[in-house]
Image 1 (tube, one colour):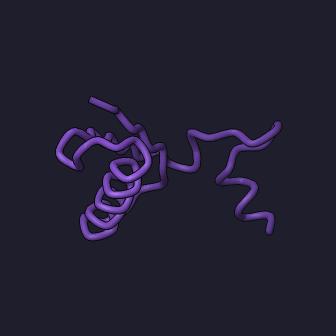
Image 2 (image 1 turned 60 degrees about the vertical axis):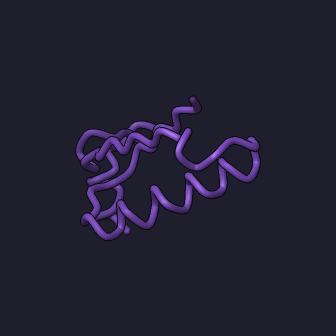
Image 3 (image 1 turned 90 degrees about the vertical axis):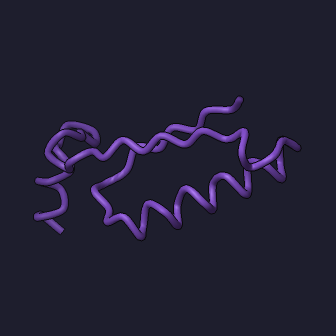
Length: 64
């Protein structure tokens, strides 16, 4: 049973449905297992909890 973990910014339920469906179908095709065998875990990560280089992502976004 493959487990796919996605770290992403907060999303609404419709976005999560689309993401899970897309990943499950693609992984099923590539791996050759049924879609029902795929487990997808979405971990929502706030930009204040991510650092890129020496800057928090939330600070980097405001500097753009």
